[in-house]
Amino acid sequence: MDFKLTEEQELLKKNVGDFARQELAPMVQEVDEKGGFSWDVWWKLASVGIQGLSGPEEYGGAGVTSLLTQVMVIEELARYDFSSAANIVSNWAMIRKLNDDGSEEHKKRYLEPLCNGEIVGSFAQTEPNSGSDVASLSTTARLEDGYYVLNGEKCFVTQAGEAEFTFVVARTGTKTGRNAISTFLVEKDREGYILGEKESKLGYRGSTTRTLALVDCKVPASNMMGEEGKGLNTALKGLASGRLLTAAQALGQTQAALDASIQYAKERVQFGRNIGSFQLIQGMLADMAIDLESARLLTYYACWLRDNDRPFAIYSSMAKTLATDVAMKAGVDAVQIYGGYGFMRDYPVESIMRNVKITQIYEGTNQIQRLIIARELLGDKRSFRELYGQK
Ligand SMILES: Cc1cc2nc3c(=O)[nH]c(=O)nc-3n(C[C@H](O)[C@H](O)[C@H](O)COP(=O)(O)OP(=O)(O)OC[C@H]3O[C@@H](n4cnc5c(N)ncnc54)[C@H](O)[C@@H]3O)c2cc1C
Image (cartoon, protein in one colour):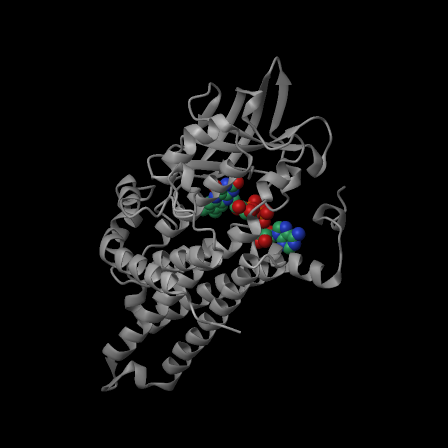
């Protein structure tokens, strides 16, 4: 066993942490109050090349393929600016999808600007009646004279309205279930690509979230990503890695909760003593630290497995669940340690509680993660739809 980070990882972690603390942290509150994606913040991130960190070198990326390194970068960003960390994870997912399944033309057009932060993309899988039950989605794509015609409604599309294109997951053919689903790249200026109003959110407010309606929206057949009917695989590919990047967002915020709680426990005086001298406060601090280190170790272990080509999906689900549950508890406890001040927007902990809630919901809710883990433990190979009665 070797827990030592490489010199490169140590340096990157330090540099990203310094950058996020000095350049991003001062902008966080304003972005949170205003709500919506901030291009100013995005360009700051671009000035140090974070958008392209995981991207292929031939398209201007830095080619960092180690998931452990990527996780450490996201953790450091999330420690100071949750929304930027989550937005970068989303950008890396766009780059990965395009690189794996995009046509040569799309790669040439979009990869470089995605890597250098000139544009963003978005991903539309969720529908009003299809969330965790992905295979029930009802958006259709009908082939007509060399074009696919898309119809349907998507919701919770992150960066919709800012994005140059959207990966739309839709049903091709007449079969039900997961084998008739395909993914398409839909450019924002296509006719019938109709955006809804910006949603107002509890947390992760430095992103834009909207619905997207597709009304007879035509795209060339070459806009299909990957093979026809395998779209769910295309959409879900990379999810196990993505979940570890979600764990990283939660770890960064838990670290922030712990840092702020320690500082406040040393400063705040009640009954003539620092509140840090009270054992009930000490218990919360100690639990937060234990939870953080456990979740971090499991996350890094899952990354190590993936980086060494070993099966890691179950560990990824475990790490995502643990890290995000731990972050939620840390956010709530940090507010408790701050007392009434913790409830105020001028103090740094209430936003942690609001932000990390999303990490228990997206990239597969924590209930779904527990089902994945249990199914694996029980050796059950059936899909969720088979398990719950709908074939
Ligand atoms: C801020 C934000 C950004 C998002 N960004 C995107 C995006 O960019 N693109 C995109 O496609 N989607 C996006 N999503 C959607 C997100 O992935 C879904 O919200 C998530 O998958 C859950 O789906 P749902 O909201 O429909 O909840 P549901 O699936 O309706 O679940 C409701 C509750 O029931 C539980 N549940 C469901 N099935 C089971 C089961 N079998 N057993 C036990 N419990 C179960 C869930 O865990 C949850 O607690 C985003 C959501 C948010 C809030």
